[in-house]
Image (cartoon, rainbow, N blue to C red; front, side):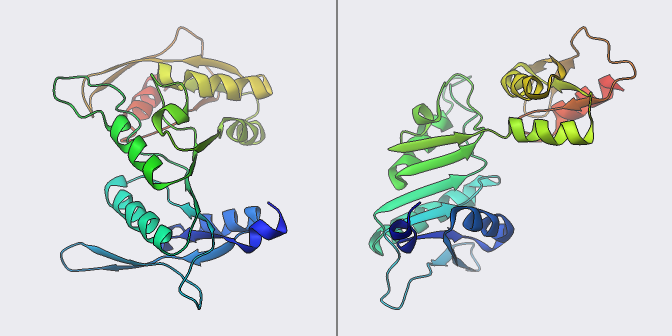
Length: 244
């Protein structure tokens, strides 16, 4: 980012992501500005954006919001994005390390809302660019297909996790708890030459999962379970019990 763009760019963040926002702002050389939240007794939110003395925002703004516990945060993003446009922002980027509502990419039962096809275009209508870390895409190949914004970027944490594992548990075996984790496990294993394997999973509901270990010898091995997303943690917990 050059000097002229830095002068017209800032990072908006919420108070519960202060630490991550500080690190991102320092790395990207962005001015850090907090969004103020007020909660009314009935649960509604009033957001106040950090405008300058003229009541405006810079032309380029980045919004940091990781979308775990997503329902209220989606309302926050809608309010922030619409208000930011009114306050002079021309280019708006969402950095969502975790991107919610990506798991439901087809209707598994009649009448189900396919949330990815609804939330993805909704975010694309608010933001010019969307950045996420290892979004949970299954039957969709790219983030751009799920979130059809003008610009999208995916950052993978697999290689950084591999580096950390190599330092903390050299010689470990990596294991994915289900087939969807295979791509990340393979990337991490290749980086440092780890042995790896992937479990199979049969899901019977949100909280009912059967895991079958792969036919590999783990006796005496240090095994590191690696997955892109843990909702309840039941799949990882069951795989751990079986490994023990």
